[in-house]
Image 1 (tube, rainbow, N blue to C red):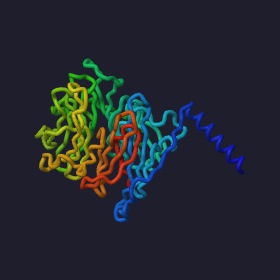
Image 2: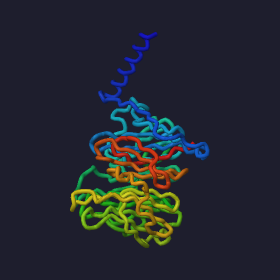
Image 3: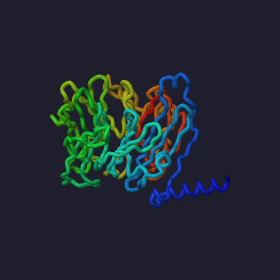
Length: 385
């Protein structure tokens, strides 16, 4: 029996090696990091969250982790072990993550694909081929994915490849329509039969885009553009018919800023003087991370951890971490709020080449636990029973 086991083990290794074309299979790790979720919280149906680690561009090190909140156990790098037959695993630069229906969708920017997995097992179902894809949203039977359309570049003021939103049939994983928008479109939101797309023009410095495209969902055509600010990035629609839009600024004299669009007339109605690199809406609180890069200083301007009240439309807390442990965060990169108990999860990109970490804070802003993640942890997706 022992010999048979050895033979089977060797055959398994050979099979993995053959399928991966000499790629190394990195096994997952599971580590206890927190107390199991209390029974009263488990009763609400939240099981845990997936975390997409972007990986540095060109390194092919995008990975997927899972935090089981019921047990308090963190599982690192689960995709490769769940899919040993897939060469190069997830691919190059994870840019967005979402669960819709029974599937988990990971947008892999430089690999020009959206990876589609079973949400329970992370087993691969298929992929959607979209060049230079960025962010994803869903409506009815369709997924909508922003695309820069052309190749990945660093900076090209004369770049002339206009971006688009791809409409994807979630049953067939085929692109069935495209709607052109501005240059280098990033995040998108769907509200009341309209889609809003943040156009960045990020490849075209100093000639950045300045508008949000408005798409009529029924005809899937762009019907107007809303003038906002340079180099737009993130969008969040609140429950008061307002759309919150972040501008990255120009990395020189124009700082990052937060703008408000009134969706009743689709015009900018105000702004909040706060920089934004990542943001998460929980109820009427918009949690914001900021750590803007400056070409003038050739470095980062310093981190901020703010809360904006979307009703008052102003900053109501300039530091949501209350115990001083923000000093241990090297590069605040992603944020999410537990929808059941209000815990805050901050993803620290550290050096961008070394493994990052996830730090959990109570809703009162006190550190509860932290765990090592993959390279550049950023994007969260919650799994419900």
